Length: 274
Image 1 (spheres, rainbow, N blue to C red):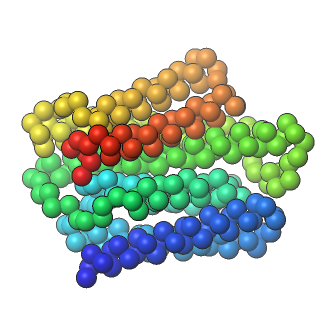
Image 2 (tube, rainbow, N blue to C red):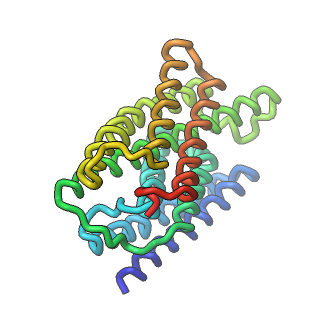
């Protein structure tokens, strides 16, 4: 019964996030301030059962709900909503929800298609702690990368609108300079978390769980690819001076690589695919 409650809370949040996305889309089309408030209200309302479902699952599992792909994607979606709340508090622009809500929906839809059974895997306390550090930091980093992607998409769309002299509702969006800076800050925040969480803590946890730090399984290879990509993004930004449209495209490409890593892991399996 508890398991059913946990899944029911997830689906309740799913439908509220979907409704929020649809209202945000309508808000962008007809530019009604009231619709923007309703859309944001639905999003934050969905955050409540989402939080309740995660806490319920945590209680049932006896450990942080980060031990399988569903829990990983679910937590990533939760953190992206929390990050959006911070963006709204910082910039006071509800229209940013028209960009962030599709990213949230993509993550939650991905989670909805994964098996939702509680993991039966048990681990020693040390391995369990390193798993929480490894997955917790990685999912926080990828949630921030999702926000960076949203800032990149917003930058590209607003830049296009300015080029066509058809700003419409885009005049409510922060300036291109601020969007560019926010996109880079998201990467600045996420990169060290991903480095420590996915690579360092992941290697320690692998040693505790499998007795080796590297097994050439899809998720480990994907983590190296993602880390290398964002390292190149830093080089392009700081050494080559890539800003504006170029860096926005890099942010979008990085998150698409993260989504591709999910697909690769599910198709080719591996220890992370459970």
